Length: 287
Image (cartoon, rainbow, N blue to C red):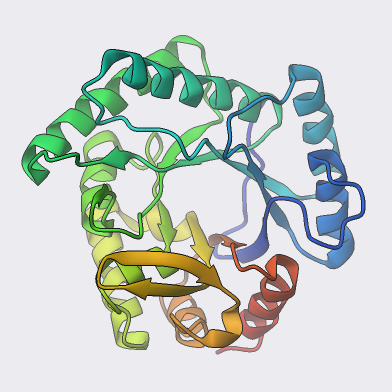
């Protein structure tokens, strides 16, 4: 099943999982609730493991098509492609493939996941191990013709975890954006480097770097997470509502317009639909 294509350049907004006000706490109801709210995307949350049946995934695909909602999925938190323990590594590969199969049936596109932890490895060693691991996963996906799904490693919020924006851009440049299209969590980028985002100039620099590394298509098909964030010198502590302004969204909205970007922004705020709607309105009224 092919992923619904976005018209470029268009930024749409959605929620990380079922909106809070949706009375029935199911992915299927969540898709319909997202549309009723006036949002356009939802990320299926498989953060404790993917257990959705094929039948339900197909129902979600139908509901998403009927309601014009773009679906993505967040894989389990308990993954580590850098583990040297064979059972843990094998479990990670298995979980990614399981999630990819479900997402394909659900008609979704981006498979978001946390790549792993350094665990004492040098950054060069970790990079080579990650390239090898992702190459294996991509080969297995190709063998199963999971063509609609794109692996989308997410920028991580702690310096002990693999996943700086620069590392992920290198990986995407290696494999190509059509196979490995990264997820930029702007709050994680901010927290990982101890208040990296200073305002619109930082956003401009990061979008420019992404275009130079991964090509114009990367800016046309962004997949982002956004929320406020609480952090320390060790990185991310917890997500906060957008009203905290850390990092600020209005200058990101302006930079997205300036760079003629398209894609999806998923709210990971504790107030998921409220802040998704606020971002949509802010983006729409920004020039």
